[in-house]
Amino acid sequence: MFKTVGIVGVGLIGGSLSLSIKKKNLAERIFGFDISGKNIDKALSLGIIDEACDLDCISQAELVLISTPVSSIADYVIEVCRKGKAVVLDTGSVKKPIIDKVVEACGRSVNYIPMHPIAGTENFGPEAAFEGLFDGAFCIITPFEGVERSLIELASEFLTSLGMVVKIMDPSLHDEVFGYVSHLPHVIAYTLVNLIFGKPREFRFIGGGFRDYTRVAASSEFMWTDIFLMNKENVVKAIEEYIDELAFIKELIEKDDRTRLIEYLKMARVFKREIDG
View (cartoon, rainbow, N blue to C red):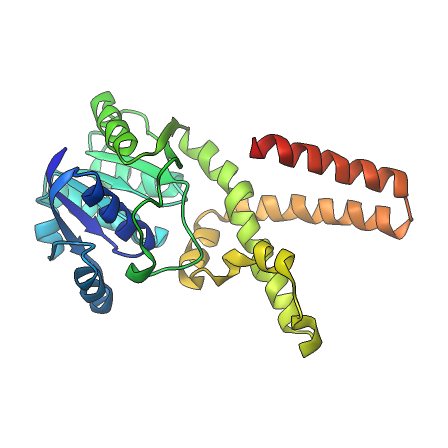
C-alpha cells in the first residue's frame, strides 16, 4: 500500500505494527524513531524496522504511525504534520484530549486519523513485539468533525489489511467506554497486587486465578500513569461506581444473604458468557 512507513515509538504496539506490515507486504521500507537509543538498536537488530531516522526523515514517509505514551502523542502528530504530508495515525487508548490538542494546533484539515487497536500484552519494549498481535483484533477509529472521508477510508483499508476489524466510535464515547473496560481493570489489578504486597510472605502462595486477574499489573507504570491522568474524569467515575459494586456485594456477604448473592453472581456469570460470545 505504501512505499515508506514511519514508526514513532518502536515498542510492543509500534514494533508489532511494523512486523505485521512487513509480513503482509504493505510497505517497501519502514523507518523508525524512538527517544530511546536502546529501543532503536534493538528494533534494528530484530528486523522490526529497516532504518532509524529522525523526525524530519519520518515526516517524509507516506504513512506515519505514532505509538508512544499518550502524553506525547499529540506533540508528535503536530510535529510530523507540520514537517510533511504524511497520513498520520496514532494508537493511543485515550482519544479526545489528543484530538483536541492536534485540531487546535493544526486545524481540522490535518492528515490525521486517531485510532485505537484493541490488542496488547503486559510486556513492553521492542523485544515484546510480535507479528500477529493484531490478527482478528478490533481497531476503533475515532474521527473528529471535519476529517476527510477519504482519510477514514484509507485508514480502514490499511487496518483491515493488517487483519483488524475496524469500528467507528465518537472520541468522547470511546474514552468513557475504555475508562470502564480497559483502564479500570488496570487500576484494579495494580491495587490488588499492592494489597498483597503489604501482607506477610504467606500471602504470596497464589494460584492461577490471581495470576490471570493481575497479569496486566506487570505493564509499564509510565504508560499507565499517563493513561489514568489523561482520562482522569472517566477513570475516576468508573472507580467510584466500582466501589459501589464492592460495597453492595460486601453487604450481601455480611448479611449472609445467600439468595441475593447467588442471583448477583449468576447475573455476572451469564453476562460474562454473553460478552465472551
